[in-house]
Image (tube, rainbow, N blue to C red; front, side):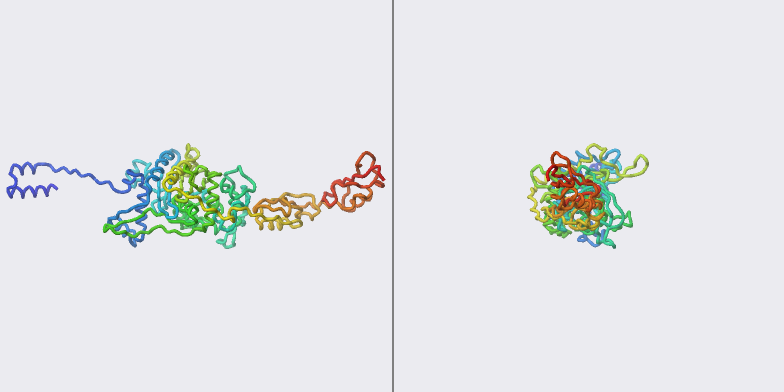
Length: 604
């Protein structure tokens, strides 16, 4: 600037436009730059609208998009030099509500825990990302992050390749996937299952992906977090109250491989490749880990935006749509620029989706997800999720218009007193373990006000009506044979121990409820095995003399026979006749027990 000024002043002096004095004064004037650097990048989006993480997600979405070039370098160049006007999908009122609730409920930093929280919302049926918030404001400036550790360039909402973390275990929210497969395979939410925590054989889990057709061998013990509900209960109750044992019972009647295939169809995948255990089926990939515990405990680490999209399928007639943060891109010539839009596919049939929606809406109205009720009366479906030791807490749900997933927990491990590193329970940090129960409705209430929501479709009778089955007569069968017969019909079998019976020792003497009783499929039936020490009291005793009846009983194996009179008098077995028998004729009784004959004493 000084060189240009001085050259111009010299020309003006040479052409007589200024005097020597004016020239000398001007040349002597110091040039002081007054440069105001223009702020740019996603830090501006964070400062102005609280959308720094979303802004970063948009940029990474474009830089991952093959529409902008064949290589990362080419896509980076085209993005930086393209002069694009990018219109995003963000809903600023929803974003503001999510940000306010996040700041109110989860701080950026807490002593003793590497605290993290995130919430993502997508539009049902389109995949448009409407909100994306986390507890740590966005900054990709290393100096700023070093100065303020409460800032972060990691987006907890997204997959690792989109600037996210490695994801978080989704806990019991995965029960919705198992429920979808349950309904798909023709079962009902009114079917009865054993909900108890217990030990089960691993070979009781069919698995067509394993060489032997079963998951494995040996015993596996699991427990329930909810220990207040036990016994045989409906799948609807197991879902609403999130009872692990019920979902184990359900999975024992299904193919484990197909349950995880259902998860894949819903778009659920790990946020980063599984690179910690080479023995697992998904080593080196983002596929889900196929283990029995996952069907109720959601052991894979998944991004919140992925869970929001999956639950959008339950609310959207079974159609899942990949998340997309962009509505339109306009080039410098005013023409639209092509980019990769959302891809929608049928994850499951509308009938299955309606059945799942029915059960998950029941979880809101009558279960653990009651905090997901709408302030506007908009129908909501939702499922809660808590991982072991309450290290992660989730609420995932939807209306027919918007789906939202909220996670609160450990962003990473902390160093413990013994020097080891681990994630810690959220229970010891005030209301942290229930913060998701405030953030999720804060976002969805604004969504309801802006987008509304319709009643969920009516589920089919197949998925919601109880199926009744008659208890078969298994008397005289071995316990194992009888148990298999009942199990194949869908009943849960219990061993009632031994009872007095004339049936061969060790064989089934009777069942409770008795043969012929109509029960809901999955109800419990108790089998009683014979001790072989009983016989049927013979007929023809009434009207015979006491001694004749006693002789008949002795011949039938009953050694102890007593006489009693129906009125006052002294019993005479030779001449008095029998008027009643206890136990009665035809009844089974222990042959070592006493049979009492009542005689008509004093009468010929």
